[in-house]
Amino acid sequence: MTTVVSLDRVTVEFPAVDGEGVVRALDTVSLEFRDNEFVVALGASGCGKTTLLNVIAGFLQPTSGKILHRDEPIRGPGSDRGVVFQKHALLPWLNVLENTAFGLKLQGVARDERLSRARDYLALVGLSDFERYPVYQLSGGMQQRVGLARALTCDPDMLLMDEPLGALDAFTRENMQELVLDAWSKTRKVVFFITHSVEEALFMATRLIVMSPRPGRITHTYDIDFSRRFFETGNARQVKSSPEFIALREEVLSIIYGEETGDAQP
Amino acid sequence: MKPGLFRRRRPQAVDQYGAPGRGSGTLISAVTIVVLLGGWWIVTQLGLIRPLFLPAPEMVIAKFAKIACTEHYFERLLVAVGGLAEVEAKCHGFSDHTLHEHILWSLYRVFSAFALATVTAVPIGISMGMSRHARGVFDPPIEFYRPIPPLAYLPLTIIWFGIGESGKLFLIFLACFAPIAINARAGVRSVSIEQIHAAYSMGASHGQVLRQVVLKAALPEILTGMRVAIAFGWTTLVAAEMVAAKAGIGVMVLNAARFLATDIVFLGIIVIGAVAFVFDLIMRRVERALVPWKGRM
Image (cartoon, rainbow over all chains, first blue to last red; front, side, top):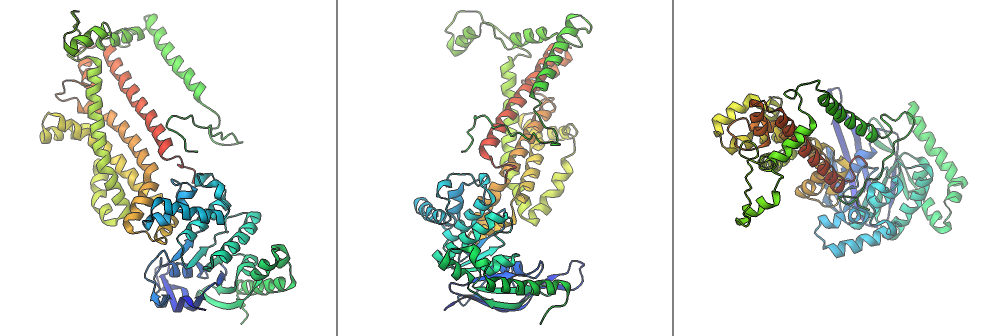
């Protein structure tokens, strides 16, 4: 397996709000993203998940440490790393199809070519019938599907998803989990996915990293395969109610709650 | 799905319990207008107020017909085209110009100054939103001159530009400039950081982010600024035409006041109000056609 993105002892510090000293948002984090991996970061607010994503996306430069994309240092954002945001990221003056093709337009791809490629990815997320719709007429779940299709249309080798399902209702959210897994299995991207939901994290991840705040760092890593079981059976509820799933869910929950009450387990 | 320029807007019924200002006010507005006009008519019919202070509506209409030269209009048109008609068709309008000449002069002044303000204020406002350097340079002069009434710097424009057209245009230009620049600057802030980050992570250059994300996102505010600006333009028109203008609605009103021709003053006021109102209606249509997403995303 080739390494797509690697972080080597990456530290990010911000000036503290009170003006004295610094806040360590990330503390010497080392991590590798390999081909076909679905890495999910889980943790309480302020644990540095989003900071980690911003560093990989290139929106943020680390204070120290090295971050490489295919052995090249990451100096800024680029179309090789697509980002799906929680919300507010679509362009309301473009319709669904134009939004999806926007990245290719930026790269100077001819109109017919970019629209036909955008249609392929709209089909992948099940929005073929909505290509002429204004994005502000879509539901939240459909907007997120446009966001996913838009990121995929640029054909990045890594997909960064910052709580993409966080603003959706519970039913839409479960459907979207399956849709994202489906898109991932068909496109074979490396995914880095942030969530607050333990169940979502366990269901989707091939590797789960649990982070903890002050300073932001990775405390636990799990290699799991519930998503593979889902692909085999096609039954998400069955996977989520299996004894192994529930046992691991309780274990991860106790880690997170343990940290929040201040007596973290080693 | 895109609303056309003249398609009727779907009613956006906010008819929930406690929604502020719920229900339609159109009927009440119509009643208000009828009551105002009717009151005007009755008061003048009963002779309660002398025509010098309040001319009767029919006097204003008669004056309109006279100075708009609506009589023998077709014949005079032929005379103007090349002496094709023998009809004696003299009509002097008011102050040596017919009403539509006055209107055209004022429209020319307001709209050329407005156009000039738009093409300069939008880039400056956007640059103020985008860069602290531009903001540092342009913020003090704009914030300083903005609250000053145009009449206060009217003498200065005469000293600088003389009594020709340029001084008048400059005065209206200044009135239009500030609201457009300030709204364009505010418009930059309505772009979300997610939209900008998304564009960069799809390979956008800085120029592409500016043109294809920031400018588009700022468009609703820019159009709002233009609506406010054109209203300021009309407000400033009379001041601009105070000095040595031969024709224009403002001149017409000022000259009429000198001769105590109250009916023409009324006529001028109604014309300015009507033209400004029609333009605002057009701007609202344009807004709905260009930025249908306004307030919905």
